[in-house]
Amino acid sequence: TLLIIDFGSQVTQLIARRLRELNVYCEIHPYQNVTMDLVAKLAPKAVIFSGGPDSVTRDGSPRAPEGIFELGVPILGICYGQQVMMHQLGGKVESGHGTAEFGRAYVSPAGERIPFLNGWFLDGKEQVWMSHGDHVSQLAPGFEVYGTSPNAPYAITADLSRNFYAVQFHPEVHHTPNGRTLYENFIRIAGFSGDWTMGAYREQMIEAIRAQVGDKKVICGLSGGVDSSVAAVLIHEAIGDQLTCVFVDHGLLRKNEAEEVVAMFRDNYNIQLIHADESELFLGELEGVSDPETKRKIIGKLFIDVFQKHADTIEGAEFLAQGTLYPDVIESVSFSGGPSVTIKSHHNVGGLPEKMGLKLVEPLRELFKDEVRALGHELGLPQSFIGRHPFPGPGLAIRCPGEITREKLEILREADAIYIDQIRKHGLYDEIWQAFVAILPVRTVGVMGDGRTYDYACALRAVTSVDGMTADYYPFSHEFLGETATRIINEVKGINRCTYDITSKPPGTIEWE
Ligand code: XMP
Image (cartoon, protein in one colour):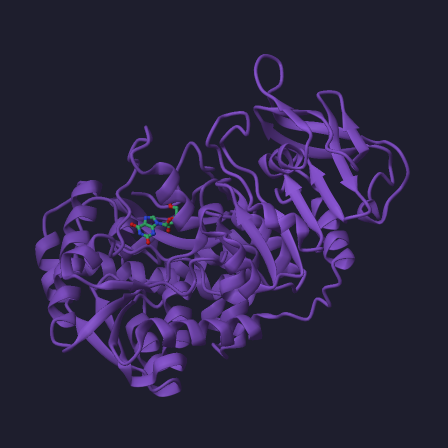
């Protein structure tokens, strides 16, 4: 095990992620919980101190247990972690005017080349990401400097006799492009073999789920998306029929989607599944509604009602499973109570656990999207499922600006299916974050054969993105667009005009509502 002591940095999970990428097993524990008893139990082969928001110069600020420095294992301190190390080992840290540094910086080599810096400084300087208020003003005994930046003379330091390393910047973030190499060097120094895999994660999570749930029952809301699917399959592997999934079909799904999801879970996995076909209810309540936020609120509320109704039929359920990912955790932490504006009320089953008195099972809480996909692979989910584009909870309702009618939904489903078929045929599906058709609330005049038509216009949307937070439109060829428009207009009755949406996000959003 590699123990990460979390001093509260926003990016601690990124350290874990970098280590998982290097096939090293690690555990994150908040500093308050790290006693020498816990350390003895974990018997870590190496320890990393994360960054954190506090100042070591403040009385009562977080510390590492003293005994940790006597373990004889390599330690890497990052940012606040560096300062804690220096402070506790006899160096000095200062805060105040002129010591803060945020953003990009360049570190140059100093002193001899050490194994920790293998692969670094090959072209002279290295770009790093700094984010600190305090700085080290005097090194602890035994430490030497191996890298400096104009504002951080002690950017990289080490006590080679004890294998203690301390850096002022954050090697785990994207803006330290060569940061991964430092983790690689560190784990090599610590003697990790790098043989930990997603398979091991699966085994470990199965054990953890069994330990948490015992012989109680779990319900899981299934959307057919990657996250809830992977969570359901994993939990099913752990506890079998103690799990029941509820799939709420709001009548706003894509062509054949409900059948595919239900077949996949019942036939391939033998998972107990309630297929709640509530399209009448949802479409009824949405009749005549055209305001986007009102649509979202109605759908969100009904979703919870329906879920609860079905969940109530499962006797003895004490747990609710959710496919919450790490970015969701971070977002809800950093935005809760924050000054951010609601652009769209995203709906999920948040609020349900308290309302129903259920405890949460969230086996994907530590993972990022691509890691969830890797875990899905490991669990044998078909690639067609794992690679699926995200689909919003309110479904086609938000791809149908204006009033929603069954007729429009039917037209939209057909057009969308052709569009996705085209994208797959051209081998573009995996390059695109998300692609869909929106049916517009206008009819336009056209001519087909010798007749006049007066039908709906539609917009095609396709974007690239890494996280859905920002996005750019996908640069299809004119041939592709022309061919696709022709197919949609010829094959879908009710559409006679096709446009391509070339708005990025911001200022647009990915969905139309
Ligand atoms: P926007 O349209 O806000 O979308 O740029 C960003 C990403 O979020 C998806 N999305 C949702 N997902 N419930 C969801 O589960 C929602 O209410 C919702 N609204 C948007 C959208 O499809 C895109 O991937």
